[in-house]
Length: 242
Image 1 (tube, rainbow, N blue to C red):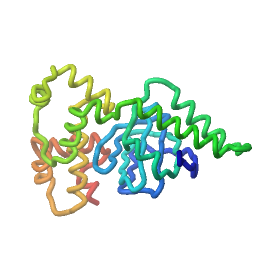
Image 2 (image 1 turned 60 degrees about the horizontal axis):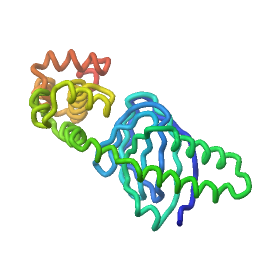
Image 3 (image 1 turned 135 degrees about the horizontal axis):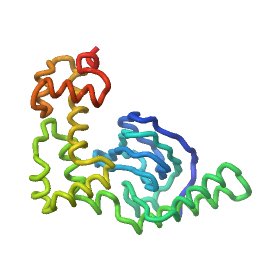
C-alpha cells in the first residue's frame, strides 16, 4: 500500500457559491456533513448530500455548485498504485462507519501523536475499501443521471414530464420521487432552475433581448420569463444585466 497522507482540513461553501474547473496533483476524499449541491467530475454530474463521500483522483477536473450552506472535511493524499483500484465519483453512505473513520483521521491529524501519520494512512485505505463496496451514485441511478446531463447540456429542454416518465418506463410518481431523492428538488423545479441558469449566461453576453432569451430558454413569453426570473433571483433580468 502506497498511500501517503498530505493534509486534512474542514471547510464550507456558502449558499449559491460556485467553484469552476479546478484540479489537484493529489487525490481527495471529501465527506459532506451538511448541505446539498451539484458536482461535476470530468463533466459527469453528481448530487452530494449529508453523509456522502466524494473521491477524486489527481487531475480530475471539478465544478461545484452549492444549493445551501455546506460543511465538509477533505483528506488529501498521494498514491500511485493503490488508487488505481478505485473510481472517482460520489458515494452515498448507508451508515456512519465511514464518518467515524473521517472523524478519527481528523483527530489524529490534529493531535499528531506518535505514529499518527502511519495510522492515518491505514484509515484512509480503510475508507477506500469501504467505498469500493458501495455502488457509485451514477451507476446505481444511471437513468436519472443521464436525464440530468441532458437537462444541463440543453439550452432549450422542452420534454414534458409525462414523456420523460414514459421514456424511462417509470410511472409519474416513481420518477418524481427518485429524481427528488437524488437532487433534493422536483424534476419540474430542476428544469426551471436550469432555464434560469441558462438565461443568466445569455444575459451576461449582452447580445440578447429579454424576448429572445425567453424563447431560447423555453419560457412561454418575455413576461413569464421576467416574473419567474425575479421570483428566483430577487431582481429583474434588466437589473441583472446591469
